[in-house]
Length: 375
Image (cartoon, rainbow, N blue to C red; front, side, top):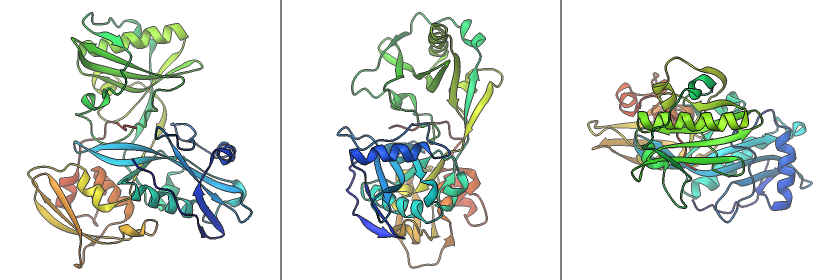
């Protein structure tokens, strides 16, 4: 994703611009005072490799009072990848809350991301009500589950499956995620303390684990196995890692993921996350996701988006042959709020209310999101 430089602009006494390296230290100080933070960890200024980008709101004296970061990503919806970004670590200084800093900051940040090609924005919020007011809609529930040691201690690896580290430039997540729909788990990329393990058989990838080692805990951010042999090998690998570190095993997942499908019973849940999605570009979002091949129709949607004004208007959505075509329309349509629009794009059934035509809601619906974000 190409990130455009934000133009400094004033609103409500604040100015908004991207942070430089020196100002990033102030960002970290503000972030630590926030009531919650993203599971992806603190963001950082953009790197040449395309890492997170941070924008700040500054008071008239030039001091940063609010920060937010974005990380490029793609979201698989209906079998197609939709360009987007993850919103990270939105934080506001306690003395400047309630003055519109976050709203103004996100308006500039989302405008930049839209200009860079982003269609949707994903966040795992500490305060869902705040993001609902900013146009985000809840699209699922993600759970941190405790995988009992007994489950892995008795696992026997398949001798035909071997473990290895991923190769540079290798796409492992794509082939393993073709059956998945949606975006629930912002698995952090392999870095300090995070390791990827690839499982392969006869030269083909059959599984992958993304592990984070924390004191007394082995956190699994991504666990995929193509068959029973790969699943047994993944459990055996987890057992060996946990035994070496004397750590308990926790797995992030939700919906119809491998843990739910392959493990009998229900593991204990330690933590829940409610991911929320927002539409940044109406045309790219609706046209970018996959639709059923056998659904045809035309609908008019009235959208009012005060945070991203480019999304405001009546949009004619035409479905034909598994593709969507979206154009501005002068006809009157049904009113659809930004959160409902996000759920419609995501294919989440809560979008089926009186403001969304029933046949369109049925056409958009996907099976429960199983959890994939590709950074």
